[in-house]
Amino acid sequence: MSWLLRVDLRGLVVPVGLIVLAELAARVTNMQSDSLAAPSAIVLAGIEAMNDGSLLKSTGETMACAGLGLAIGFGIGLTLGIFVGLFRPLDRMLEVTIETIRPIPSVALIPVALLVFGFGYRMEYATVAFATLWPTLILTRSAIAGVEPRLFEVARVLRLSLAARIFKIVIPAAIPRIFVALRLSVGIALIVAVTVEISANTIGLGHTMMEAAQSLHPDTMLAFLIWVGILGWGINALMVYAQKRWFDPMLGGAAR
Image (tube, rainbow, N blue to C red; front, side, top):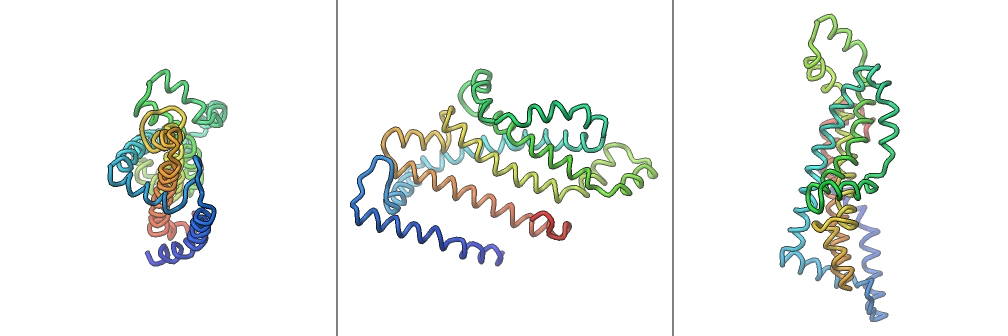
């Protein structure tokens, strides 16, 4: 992971510089604000949230919803993408339906999900599932289209069943690009989960941020906001490392 360490050190230059400037500005102006806070106050608020358990509790709620929604959306999108990619008539039959529903913003479905599921986990992971289904479906369909046609000819000669073709030929050949779809969906899942919590749900990091803002505690709000960014960065860094370690050699680096 030496490449990751090098990237980290270079990437820290700008944020560290901005933090130092913000702290100096806060001390020079003796800032008193209901919407901003000094970096030192934000760090102390984050430590306090960690000690009282609110940060870990909210993180667990958000990650549970994002993870379950991702599993549902990715699973459905992967299945549909494989079948749509394999069967051209099915692709043409579903094209209008997919292209009509896919552009609908996931957050626009929050009122519908709220009416169906009410507040809580189900409403949130249903919205996350909808958001992650479409990029997975589209990228999986594209990955299947990129499988070498001669592999399908070999499958026909060997008279492989549909299940055998999927698990022995299609998935192994397309899995590097399918992983790219997973990496994209992971980021979408976290974004949508926090967005749902901010706008409608009563659990998770987003809701805690809104409570802090409404209580005029900008240091706590910003601490949770920064934590969301760190969480997203860490998850993406792990996904990038896994992609480079396992799948980029198969693609010759084309998936970067």
